[in-house]
Length: 236
Image (cartoon, rainbow, N blue to C red; front, side, top):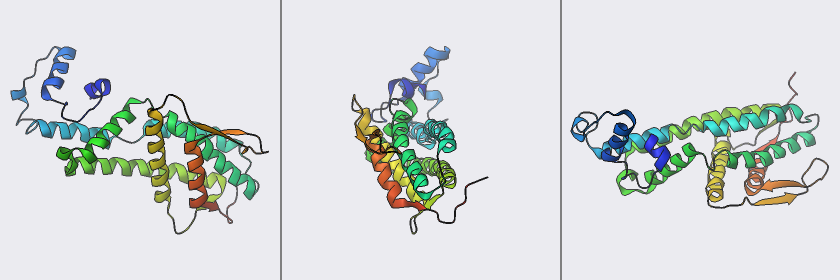
């Protein structure tokens, strides 16, 4: 895994026994030969490459992104005015605005996210790995676990702000949509030197605020997916 973290992933085919074993010897002084691994630990090099990439995609719990979201939302939830439906809806859109910034900052430039993107590309495009059920299943499991974590976070936010998912849409559809947008915008931002922002008169009293394009997209998602819960009562 250290080889991937330092050198990155190109096609999956560069994850050779020779490359990895040379690193093991350099780090530990222990010399391991191909013969001691092939048909004993892995049937062949292709199986080794698949197992290593499966470990990367199965670990896509987005721990960094979730931690960043909790650090953002904790103080915000305590500061919002939730005394009226109008105030609660503004608070929801403010979460969308700030989440757009955090979602990009917590992904772009982080090695684990870059590696996951690389393996995901290999999984869906490389002829050798495209049909490998182990790799695709590992990717599906990783995404499902991530979805569960984001479902919990969204449920907490909705409970604090008195909003709900608009029927017949579902919470998982909401998290899938926001996650796909965040990943897509982060990929685009990773190829740019400057962030694209728009100033809008969206403050509580009409004052200008900076919005990322992702934040604007998340506002649209919130408008379609969510609504004020008329039966909600403020906690406490």
